[in-house]
Image 1 (cartoon, rainbow, N blue to C red):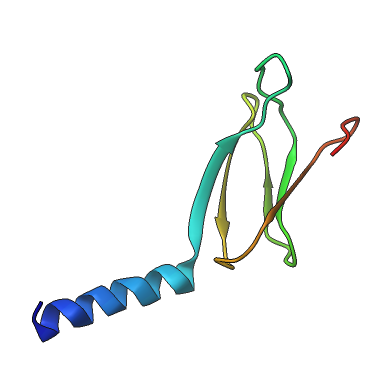
Image 2: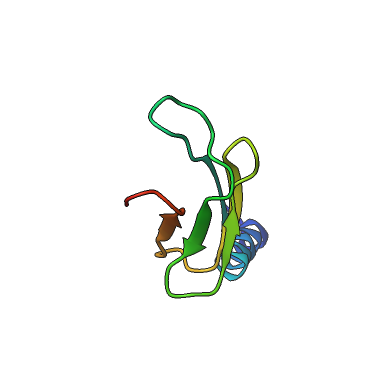
Length: 77
Protein backbone atom coordinates (compact mmCIF):
# COMPACT_ATOMS: atom_id res chain seq x y z
CA UNK A 1 0.00 0.00 0.00
CA UNK A 2 1.51 3.35 -1.00
CA UNK A 3 1.41 6.56 1.08
CA UNK A 4 -1.40 8.05 -1.00
CA UNK A 5 -3.65 5.03 -0.48
CA UNK A 6 -2.89 4.98 3.25
CA UNK A 7 -3.69 8.70 3.57
CA UNK A 8 -7.00 8.22 1.73
CA UNK A 9 -7.88 5.26 3.94
CA UNK A 10 -7.14 7.31 7.09
CA UNK A 11 -9.22 10.21 5.78
CA UNK A 12 -12.19 7.93 5.10
CA UNK A 13 -11.86 6.38 8.58
CA UNK A 14 -11.80 9.81 10.24
CA UNK A 15 -14.80 10.94 8.19
CA UNK A 16 -16.78 7.92 9.37
CA UNK A 17 -15.97 8.79 13.01
CA UNK A 18 -16.93 12.46 12.62
CA UNK A 19 -20.17 11.81 10.78
CA UNK A 20 -21.22 8.72 12.74
CA UNK A 21 -23.08 5.74 11.41
CA UNK A 22 -26.58 5.29 10.12
CA UNK A 23 -28.58 2.57 11.86
CA UNK A 24 -31.72 1.33 10.11
CA UNK A 25 -34.27 -1.06 11.51
CA UNK A 26 -37.87 -2.06 12.00
CA UNK A 27 -39.82 -2.23 15.26
CA UNK A 28 -42.54 -4.89 15.27
CA UNK A 29 -45.04 -6.42 17.67
CA UNK A 30 -45.11 -10.12 18.56
CA UNK A 31 -47.09 -10.81 15.37
CA UNK A 32 -44.50 -9.15 13.14
CA UNK A 33 -46.61 -6.05 12.38
CA UNK A 34 -44.64 -2.78 12.19
CA UNK A 35 -45.30 -0.29 14.99
CA UNK A 36 -45.79 3.37 14.11
CA UNK A 37 -44.65 6.29 16.29
CA UNK A 38 -42.13 4.41 18.43
CA UNK A 39 -39.33 6.63 19.77
CA UNK A 40 -35.74 5.62 18.92
CA UNK A 41 -33.19 7.73 20.82
CA UNK A 42 -29.41 7.64 21.07
CA UNK A 43 -28.69 7.44 24.80
CA UNK A 44 -26.79 10.34 26.32
CA UNK A 45 -27.89 12.75 23.58
CA UNK A 46 -30.92 14.54 22.18
CA UNK A 47 -30.50 12.65 18.89
CA UNK A 48 -33.58 10.64 18.01
CA UNK A 49 -36.32 9.73 15.57
CA UNK A 50 -39.67 7.93 15.35
CA UNK A 51 -40.75 4.89 13.38
CA UNK A 52 -42.89 5.43 10.28
CA UNK A 53 -46.28 3.82 9.57
CA UNK A 54 -44.54 0.49 8.82
CA UNK A 55 -42.32 0.54 11.92
CA UNK A 56 -39.18 1.50 9.99
CA UNK A 57 -36.59 3.94 11.35
CA UNK A 58 -33.22 5.37 10.38
CA UNK A 59 -30.95 7.26 12.78
CA UNK A 60 -27.47 8.69 12.35
CA UNK A 61 -25.70 7.94 15.64
CA UNK A 62 -22.91 10.28 16.70
CA UNK A 63 -21.16 8.01 19.22
CA UNK A 64 -19.75 4.76 17.78
CA UNK A 65 -20.04 3.26 21.30
CA UNK A 66 -23.60 4.60 21.74
CA UNK A 67 -26.75 2.66 22.49
CA UNK A 68 -30.32 3.08 21.32
CA UNK A 69 -33.27 3.46 23.67
CA UNK A 70 -36.60 2.38 22.17
CA UNK A 71 -39.90 3.33 23.80
CA UNK A 72 -43.56 3.74 23.04
CA UNK A 73 -46.71 4.55 24.97
CA UNK A 74 -48.43 1.43 26.29
CA UNK A 75 -45.39 -0.85 25.87
CA UNK A 76 -43.09 -2.33 28.51
CA UNK A 77 -39.34 -2.35 27.86
